[in-house]
Image (cartoon, rainbow, N blue to C red; front, side, top):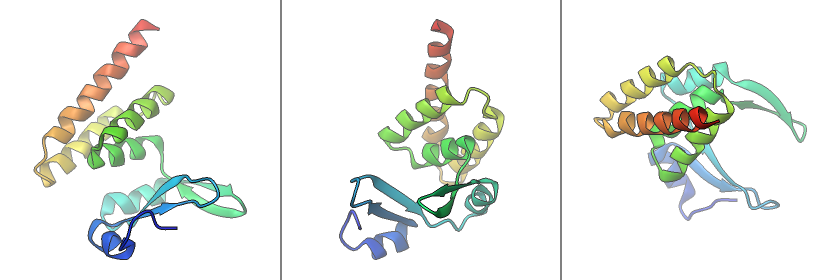
Length: 128
């Protein structure tokens, strides 16, 4: 079920289809990947079986990159959770690709926000 009116038009301009699973009420963002990075993300994805259907699930590092580029407040909270749960992520690769997106989108704040979340995660780990 769509979460918004004119979902197809929104998906056409934003490359994201905003859905809601009716039974659970869970929001689902279905990315319509066209960029090389997005295609590579699908190629690197693990295949999981859910309810009899095989679905690709992006790697934690690729999720961090996608969420850093989206840059919404809840995405930064998700990044923090992903980093905390996956301490061995290739952060050099994450930084490089987010930096490339920041340059291409002329949005240097993407890099700054990622670094702020990384610093917060380091501080939390140091307290443990």
